[in-house]
Length: 493
Picture 1 (tube, rainbow, N blue to C red):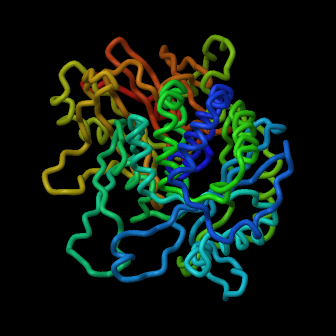
Picture 2: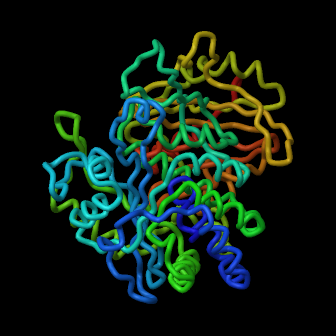
């Protein structure tokens, strides 16, 4: 029952709340009733799902339908906006999650080859299950169909999520168009901030000016940050209302199951929650005509093998509470030169932040002397008069105010941005539980890994916290991330 929140909360609840399972079992009737009362079963889907082996691994297909007001008004067919496959296997050392690009070209049973999200338009969750199972050649045991309205309400109910927004997200559909292909309205500024329901939904669904791969990375990054922040006490204390939200805004194959089936799934979620989440990269690529995503049979087999036989990687995204006492920071000697792909841009960087630095009394502004040779500083805002780089006020959950700024740089590849964040908040949640520490040029840096890639590297001073964020798809190499962090210099020095 906890699993109807993955798209916008399902993973958050299933893999964060599952450790409260033993307590929930004591009040199982109330919990199941809270879920069942508003929930709706997916029609005719049971006969296309694989039987569940008691105590064995289970694969869950999570669908987010792209149904907007304009679709309803125009009576357009609804396609699955998001397709995520989750593998719960307590025998393994990690829980696998994989996003399937919605533009992936596949064979749809009974129809001509098309984008995989067309399966939803032609036959709903039932045909999507058949299509995904034929594609991956793996059993699908459960399916969850998420209405995005539930995502907004669940995020708000959980107190919102602090997210590291990589760049400016803006679209107001100007000039107005009547086309059903308008992109969703979004208005999010870059920087670390508290993101609530509507903005959170706009962020994870955004696909304007990037592609399915960047979008999948953005969704998984948001889920990772949400999972790390939401406390078990919040989830357990508010479990009945959360279950009502999940039941009201999702359809599942187990909505009408007996208590034993629901509890069996909850038990599996509890056992799997002890393991970190491992994001399995879908090894597809954009087709030459840029209309479809394609994947070779060899790459698909490699992806599926990794999904089924995954092991925990070094420094997984979700390590909170799992690490033992860490050794002291490693000392890394500078080698004088810049990492491959970097260039010295001290004058350019200081000129970029100089005006902003005057707006931030009490927060020394550090900028990177080094940047990627490709790409550049983002020099313009989305609307006239918007100041770049951004300086702003940041509030913690107790309403304490901090000053903050964000420098955004483009990687040079579609939808990929990296950046430098500074804030007077000395202990923001994003800096909890680093993977390790290193000493470079007299500073101690905390590193946060995603597999074997550095996704974030941070440094703290008496005045606040600073960090370098990799792109959503971790495009910067470890040497580049460390070189940029090591080059941070205070304005005027």
